[in-house]
Length: 311
Image (cartoon, rainbow, N blue to C red; front, side, top):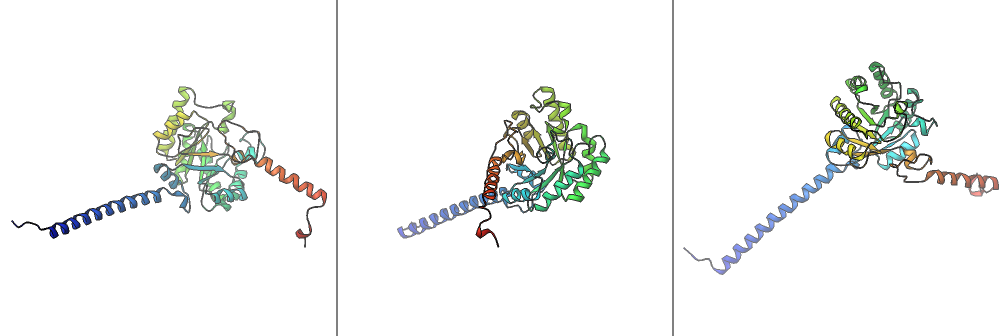
């Protein structure tokens, strides 16, 4: 057997080192490729149009869902341009737009008006519209007719319904028409006179179990997401873990798949509503009031308009 000389050993060593380096480059490239693919899959900010399927994918990928209410064209355009995932045309318009004490007075025609204004402004966000009180409870045919009007007249993408087992037939009928439905459990404002208070719901074992059962029911019926309002954080996290559809919380802690707030509340346009779960990101009440006061003073003093502000 011939001995390998020094030159041949050096050549073999170079070949071996080259192979090791090539293998490492391949491994590094594969890791980088997988990382880039993972980022691409999770970067839902680049989605051109959010759908009910999109937010289900967001849950599967561990991406939190952002949701706010909107009621008019101008604000909806700002929220959509900011990159919000879901816009809810909420029956809270009854409170913040019309000044009612509860959400009950707002009509189907009024909800369609607000929804139409929002849809005209939106390019990306999923637009969900609340079915108002009296438009779906107790009669599944009425529920379907109400939903048809919302979808056809406003161009919205989905509707939201409060309740679980008690509105099962209405939800089934709406879904049978191919219309996406978002559920709403916990504190359901349309039932305020039944509850008699806006305090935290499902703190007792019986109500907590009923809420979990309702969440599973809504999932089994085919709802694409559920809003949980003002319930213990531990319970909300438990529900989010045990259902495959997104759970969006309002006053339900951080263990859910997304959050929703009323736009007027989070921007500080109103000052009266101060629940623990609300974070005010701006104080627009004082900013707008200050701007109007400056305008009044400038008009009264003759400073507005000045020579550069007239023809």
